[in-house]
Amino acid sequence: MRRNDPDIAEIGLFGTPRGLLEHRVRLAACVLLARHEAISFSRLKQVLEENDGSLGTHLRKLEDAGYLLVEKSFRDRRPVTWYQLTDAGRKALNAHIANLKRLIEQIE
Amino acid sequence: MVNKQSLEDDLAYVRTAAEQSSNVHVPAIYLLWAAICLCGFSLVDIVGPQSALIGYFWLVATPVGFGTTIWLAWQARHRAGVVDRRQSSRWALHFLGFVSAGLLGIAAVATGQLTWAGFSSHWILLAALTYFLAGLHLERRLLPVSLLLGVGYLISLFMTGYGFITAGILAAIALVTMAFLGPRNADAAE
Figure 1 (tube, each protein chain N blue to C red):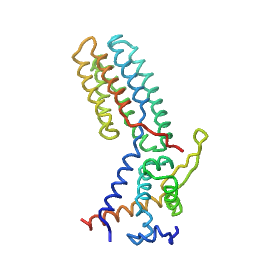
Figure 2 (cartoon, rainbow over the protein chains, first blue to last red):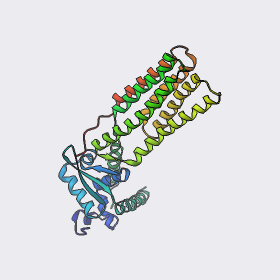
Figure 3 (cartoon, helix red, strand yellow):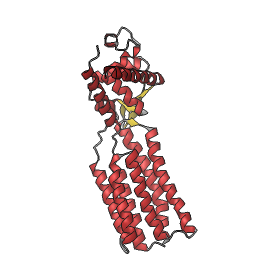
Figure 4 (spheres, helix red, strand yellow):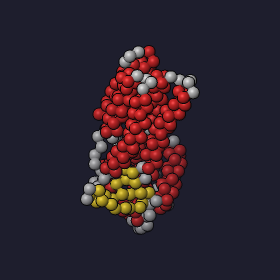
């Protein structure tokens, strides 16, 4: 993972590499992938209401961190990019959710 | 410093996305089972509850319908860009339970504890219960179908002559309505 990524380093809410999941698009992408086995890029784009460039950047960050597995296939001669959550991604997501719960309790 | 409002907004965004992600509606499946229910239930009134034709119909229609449903759902999920074998198995096991319970009901007829007419009514009751549980645990939209099937069960008990045809029509109306009321899926497998 690129620790000097300003998007990750600046937030650092929990002071851990899990800062990567503090962006709502990346968090939502991981939550969706935890619920389903695999989701295509287009479906993620549709559900998360993001444009190609922005979503691509977020997903690349998660992929670089080893949280996502990417697989390319073809359907009706058109390329389809499928994303899956890795064990490391699931672990990071669970830890992030646990941290969020603690944080919410503190706020309340 | 954590901004409470921004945290709430983020969580609402994630929740909405999670809710939308599993919406894959396949009208063809509803239409298929509407046709099967209409023909299968109506047969009881048309050829009589003792006729072997009813058994043959369900013996063929159930596995064919089941297989076609799995194929249609698989196609739709891939087109929509969501693969979820766990969810698909849950659906398959749910309706497999219904088929198994229905087939085990034949034992009650074989041992003389139930007439063929009674068995046909119980088949509708089982279908109502199956759709009710599916509505409760899998897809909320199926609850009205279970309600109409429940009414169909009562009609099949008390209305002689056209009870099963009426039950079949009610089930078909409910399923066709569900087919056209569902959300439209955009092709998202790119």
